[in-house]
Length: 298
Image (cartoon, rainbow, N blue to C red; front, side):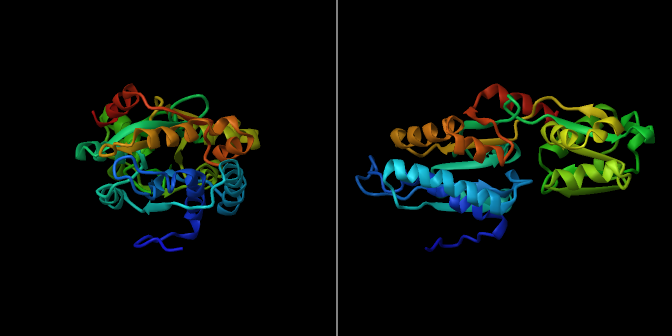
């Protein structure tokens, strides 16, 4: 099977498998051209963290086979996996069916005018993530200013994403320098254990982590909650957004994709699949979610 110009790393094989979930759409009659048209899905690598690839693939296959059996479909889809914002923006210049991006990238895409936000991720009953800035209680780092020249871990694959924007925002609000000048050292990683445990074991001074990841780790080790201090808490911040192509005229096809995504949580295998990405379900987008996110830039 060939996907021209697409490089799929072993850590992102799941996205290839995920494409089969949408196979009922692949050779649907195109209402505009009257011909068959393959569906095209674009993903940002930034959205995926703390997922064991082999577990995700196994579970996705189970859910996929159920969908395929129900619909009597054997075909596959084209998946475009983008390493950075530039790749993703370039990918949307060609017709696509949906793009799954971070909110940071969405802001850039909206300026191009070729996407319309439709769905968002829901976690812990909320439309986005809450972030914590965490330190150890016994280090007495009780004010943001106490972290000057300290070592910091951030839960993100790269700099410039939502947790970094939030951190820069609270530094500005406290009239402190930008993070790269304020902190002594900053480390990024997509695994919550690699972010929080170094703080717990006194190897790093502070960490920015999602509330969801923090809560899970506290359940596994109650001493984490006992020994660590939440220095700052963000508002709920929009993180992952699924958008449709503004050039698309096929509303029936859009509705089919929409219905599959918004009902995954009603299926046992679908719920287990969503849990791999710390999601409760996928819900409709609201403009107010982005409005609140944009406050990070002020």
